[in-house]
Length: 427
Image 1: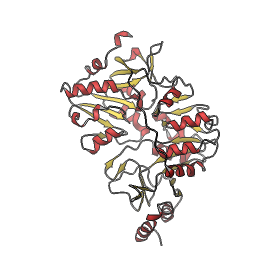
Image 2: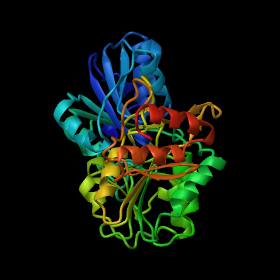
Image 3: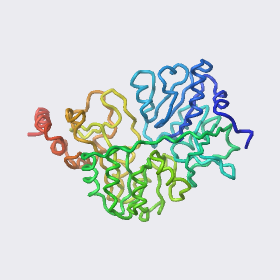
Image 4: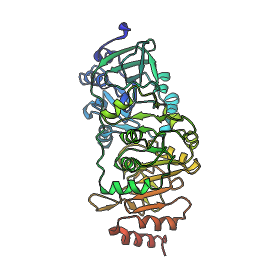
């Protein structure tokens, strides 16, 4: 084992100019190694190195604006630093559904090195890929070299991908703090939206909750439910709360009965401590977790995701504001479609009715020019604001328009009605 133990700088020294690297999702971001590669790039020792990431966290040197010629990133779902890098010009993004990420790596990306943050090595020589299933297996299959960053703070999950020391090229040890996701502020609007959704969720439903204040508000509002199941791409603190209070126990799930299934986790230290050595949390590959047929196998599946804007057609934009890049498609569409195929399934797209201090309506006649359609008009089920729930699936365009105007902010309803009549969408 000791012959593969290196420093982060020694690992970085093995990266050649022109190499293509990848890390998986969230907690697998190798902060110490990436920083060491960034330092080499600053000194001009390497050029043209590409580092693919998904929801990068921490220092993310590959998105430093002054390093792009030498060390640059391709974001598959953006955190703040990648978002800024792309919007200011030099960064790049990979358009794809989350469920397709592993296949894209296997079939389309020429990958030199997988570089991952993992838990400490166990007595049998295995590292656990802590809080991530994601694309890990695909990266290990495709990369010609594998380097690991063993972080003493990384939770060890018995049911996650394991990597044996004999199957890697080297590893370093670090005690870097794990990335912490600040808890979202649940204001009055988010709490109201959470309550509106929660009252429509039956006991025994299986849940997917997205990221942000509204999904967290839903989680809080569900604490009086019973026998909920969790099958989700992202494991969050709100789900820990549901498990701890007994609202979620996974006992009625037809597959993975009694077990929480997720593909990655980002949250608080309390959440990481809850995960550590927890046999009832399984971190599985994203092409399985987000497989539409797997989602649909759960009766009463409920998907809850956020959006930035919705238009009269029911088109949902959740990844850009006009042409300004925000995040990525992620798994929203996977779960919207999977819940539709689930017996008794429901999908909710939630957003506050306005933004910019009530100066802009998020329900619009048409999406802001340049906005990316995340969920199509043909897939959308229910849209929720603090003013109510608009059921769109099975509704005509004119019926949708009327329903959406009814949940818009009151100060915009006359204007929206005028625009609808101008387009012959209302009489």
